[in-house]
Image (cartoon, rainbow, N blue to C red; front, side):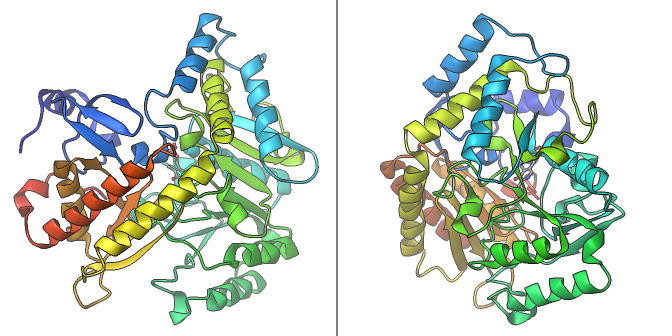
Length: 439
Ligand SMILES: *Cc1c(COP(=O)(O)O)cnc(C)c1O
């Protein structure tokens, strides 16, 4: 394997526990949608570090915000005080997130701590012990967030004792052969009436597009109908917008593609544009449940909060949701066009700049994990960075920066299509990819 000196040093110094390797990527810089490798080679970033780099790399608005926050640092925490950027961020999130009644904002570092907090506080505040979520869901990598997740990569991790998982509405691999989601809704309704009594369920976690589970877009109106069912039982809907929220899908919030307003909304990843920050927006009676209930010392630090404010302001000022919609359409259509003769491409789906390409074995619907692995490796060789997701590890995931240009979308589609076709034609050896198992 042809890895750079920086990559070799990583292996000798950094823990494997936090590695999910797809190819030997070692980055020394970046700007916009471009990453620069240790070797000096430029790569088109079609992942944005799993959607985190929402404004791309080295965005001037984030640099200015972080610089400003550090030039006159207003402490480093909100636990025992407050600061201007944290308050302003909370006010901005309340303004930008639809919802009724008296609401509050909780600030964290990651999608994981935010979802973990929801999973702890909603049962505590409601007195209900059960939680529902979808199989395939990825809500985080801490014990509490994993305990309400259903992703196969976390098999063997203890689940919350009150957790009930149900299948995600997947039109490509539908529950009971019904792509409309009707049969699944009936199944959930039946559960709530019998073995998982609805009046014992505190909340229902949902990703409006199930990203790590395979970039699955639910059938139209499924989530709004599920929300109605939840409302009937007083179950709070928790919308995990960590990966697909804040402009990525062509609307500010992914749940806005359907006619419903979640009770609780969770933000992370792209909110900080590269700095660690997450947020929960929800009812005051939940998020004011008790003091000192869920806190980490650096929560609400003014540096991360300032970066998040810059991200939110830029998304609005530069109309990045509309841009993501337009360039996502180009990226998806070009991939569809360029791969129309490729029998291994089973499905291409997504909204805006959240796109999944499901790879199958020629002539069957069987997941083709080996091809996904070889495709992302080949794409890296050709000059683009993206990874794969899914319970069967066979879905290419494209979540580029929202600032991706039309030319970059077109160039990205060409690399994706070429990588699939060359990987399918055997241009990547088994030996080359064995070290990079992904997940
Ligand atoms: C990544 C992700 C999380 C966890 O976020 P971290 O920043 O890794 O803690 C939670 N939910 C969804 C939908 C995610 O994609």
